[in-house]
Length: 316
Image (cartoon, rainbow, N blue to C red; front, side, top):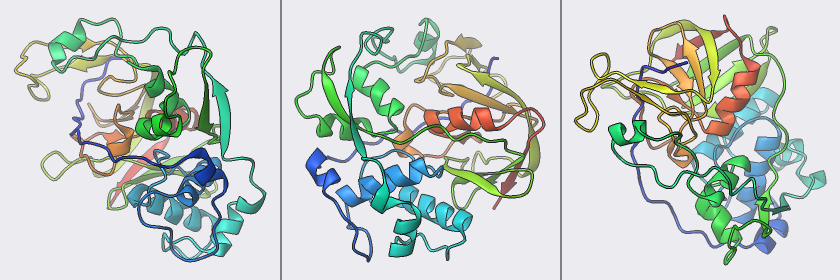
């Protein structure tokens, strides 16, 4: 399926990382607010939320908006007071005291290092000439696989070559959630997408980027028309807008670093969809051109929960 709507990204520099594997494995929670900045206990919380089926976005160990909104999602689903603040009851409900190890070892394979893209050009016309808009680094590919911020993954494995045969420490976010969604709410003010089953039970919740005031996301109710995995992208300046001064229509190749990432969930409102992104850490910082942007791993999970005809409601 070719995609006909660009949701632009704004780039910003990321934070520095200093945690070690020991900082994470030895971290404990004794009550009170999470530490400011980056901490081992926040890494644990993010992984536990991910395993529980409520996405914290990227796992990076930083206290912030995406993790706090995930906490609110877990509290809502499990019947706790919804305040986005960790306490001992929520910690216990996440199974923290009996959880499997938060970190695990992983050995880089030849396949991990294969089929990388040399460089992603900035210009849309140059992107259209590539065979794929793939990962450019092994560390980028593995960070997405384990739901981690790439800088955090590299800092956790300081000095690692990321070459085949090298052994890394990575987080273990658990298995992909299974189920069937009957309805999805896009909660604009919360910047979360929330899926419900046919009985009205909340299944999961994901952090998202939505449209700005100038290029807003849709209002009201639409429905899923189709799901495309690894989609190409149709650049149509006459329908949407001109990028990089390029006025000709183009088809961009598929790949995780493409404009819509690894999945496009087509909506009944023309040119709008739910899709992935190449900058998952920026979901709460960036606005889209109206589409709803997820991390690639979250929208891949959602793609298996929804099907044609599922309701998608945009709420304030």
